[in-house]
Image (cartoon, rainbow, N blue to C red; front, side, top):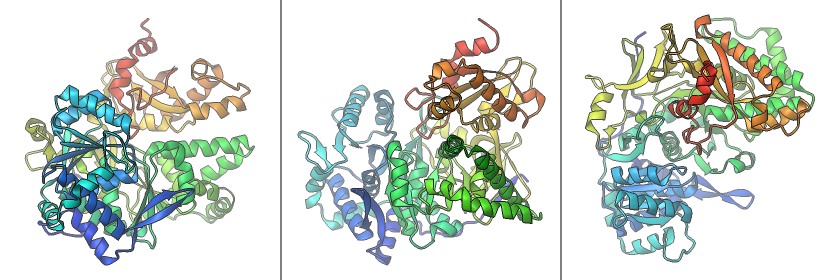
Length: 611
């Protein structure tokens, strides 16, 4: 198949905008709990009426600050309730939200200030305010950029939410309504800068239509968990990422209670106390939970039991997949084994997510099919989807009724997916962005003559319209022998090893395929203790014979999935970790391949025998 299409399920008036969705939810039930705010060791509900009141007050403050319809307002903060409040208030003021990742440097912020030219920047704390002021100086915008702290606590000499709201007390309801209704679906709602795996980030213009159509159609496309009674979710992904914000719009459109967890150290506790019914996550979260569960079982002397439970979960899920394609499904013996482990093992895994999660959505980067089968077999469905910043949110997704593990699903409503002659995935529909901000040449290059966005990813479509991503065009390696190798599938398989944090498959212009591996510090500690090597450091482990043997097993397992010419012949273990702070991962934990290769050129030369 060369093209797959899903028709739009819900249409919207062209004169509407995102804020109308919130008002509709409010009018249906003003006391519905839209948000949950942390209160001591628990959570306190915030009603739609209370939220709308706070949004209106902040929007009036922005208007009093001089923000006009169409102006840009930036937000630099970790994920928290005030981020969401600011985002919606900006839309009520008729303005355009410009998210900035909390990990951004002054240099990166300066480019966004220069390109988007926001008049107001809302920041998390004084430290972030200093970064913005430094950036404003670099961009020559010190006199035109106002910085406001996302707090109501008084701060000497600095504007806060409270002072901004006080300034807006004289703005009339009529003036606010005029600003709010000045925007229509075709207007910009946000300028979202690409995370920058290569080159300078480009500003993607995301419209009200992109967010709004996604929200109303996703609710009908995935009703099993989005429309269930008392649906609630915990947001812990960066709200600077467009997917997280698109899901947040889905939540207030559907009346789903949303809580925020911006701290990795707080996440597990928040999951236990808030007990979400569904989650949005990235593959690294699932990899870490799987690895931790396996290691804990081994430490408790139950490694064999966990291994058997894992094999059963995967086999059961694969049999369910086969039944969906006309096969026989799980055998009686498999069902019996699965039932046994569903009493002995799987509940503990589900408890990590709070005990109430049955569905999760995975995006941002590829998920290992093995992990998808494992979690589904253990009672946690992972609906893997596919999208880019330019597609606002997933443009394809596996639904509850239509799931094929290993694929990224079928087109979202209002979306068409087509394959170009070279296998590149092309997308067109209501979620595709309007273009790159102030960059007409890049916009023209990004679209085909008939309006399809060039994703840069390679894929296949099966006879039922399920898309499978096979690699990224720019990541394809061509060895000295002329063999084309997609590194992604090998890297996914390598990361299934508990000891592997990240894997970078290399071989461009080289005589064979190799790999650079980084170790997982959290997994290394219990592993080294279990192998009578307590206290083993990352540097020591990179040279340890037993560690290298286990990594070789992981490489052998990955090699078994590809042809001989694509197999990894040698690997090198680096004595460093790839992190967001080191510049090797994006904030959504995607690998910056070019940065890794550039920074570890010496390791590459050693790998290929040049000293």
